Every structure is written in C-alpha cells, then in structure tokens.
View 1 (cartoon, helix red, strand yellow):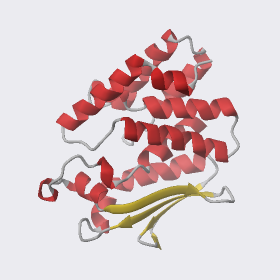
View 2 (tube, helix red, strand yellow):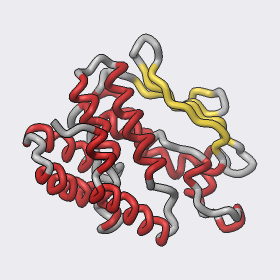
View 3 (cartoon, one colour):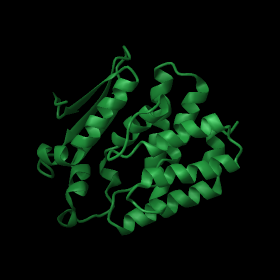
View 4 (cartoon, helix red, strand yellow):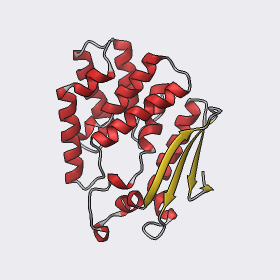
Length: 219
C-alpha cells in the first residue's frame, strides 16, 4: 500500500512539484510549491476524516492533494489533465492498485475550475482544499505597484480560515480582506467561478458552502 510518506519522499514527484512551480513563477503566477500542495493535501485529508470516511480514502485525498499541480510542468493550460496522466505513470510504477490510481487520477484531472467536477469524494475534498488556499504568502513579488489583480486579491487577505462546522453540515471559508488593497468586487471577479465550484464540491459531500468576507456571509 502506497503511503503519503512514500509520496512525499519520492524524488520524481518532488522534482515535478519544484519544476512546475518554477514554470509558474516564470509566468508570474502565485506560489504553487510545497507550501501550497502540502496545505491542500492535509486539508483534503482532514475534510474526509471529519466526515467519517475510511482511513484509506482519506490517505488517497492526501496523495491527490500533494500531486495535484504537477501538470504545470507541462503547461498551465490543461494542467489538471496533464497532471492526471503524469500521476497515472508515477503511481502505476509504484504498483498502486488500479482502483486507487483511478480515484487519485480522477481527482487530479477534475480540480481546475475550467473543467472540474467533483466526480468522487476525493475529488470534492481536493477542490475544496485547493480553491480555499487564499493567503498573502502566495504572492511572490514585494512591490504592490507591480501586482496584477491575482496578486492583489491574495495580498489583500489579512487572515483566512476554512472549517467544517461542528454539525458537519457546512464548510465555511472566512476571509478578512484589506479593502484598501483590493475591493471585494475584485475578489469576486477572480474567484467567483472557484467559489461556485466549491459549492458543487461541498454538495458532493453532503455539505453546503459558505463564504464570509469581513464578517458578512456573501455566498
């Protein structure tokens, strides 16, 4: 049985994560390296654990989360599908059972908002974990004057937290935004499609999705 620890220590996977992030850095995208994929992996696993899924399904969510962005080493366009194909090769060579490879690859191939759909619980958890990773530290640049809208909306987030309510009925993304840096409207211009995808993913897990901005429930 392939464990999250084995995936984390795999040199090929680590290389693809590093080179994928370097490619995105060259194109001016926000951080997609170990900080991002590790956060996504842990939160995807945590979501399913809190909802009572079996241990192995929770581990597969971690694995999908950790590997979900390796396709960016090929190209940002269709990176989810590229990543799924790469993950298939890697996991198959590690002798992961076909049914587990199928779950992980389906999740990875369905995490980008342009083509995504929560086809299984692992995919739903991956979507929620990925799309709610909004934070100032993902911005690479130091000069606010050079920020594009993606940089501004991430840099404007002073505090962010995502939680499942104690009754396991809702997942809540709570943002504290500095509107002097980025108005709330800019946030919605960039992230509305992602938040609607989060609503679908939450529904796949029997949850509702809520977005709170500066103490107000906006979605």
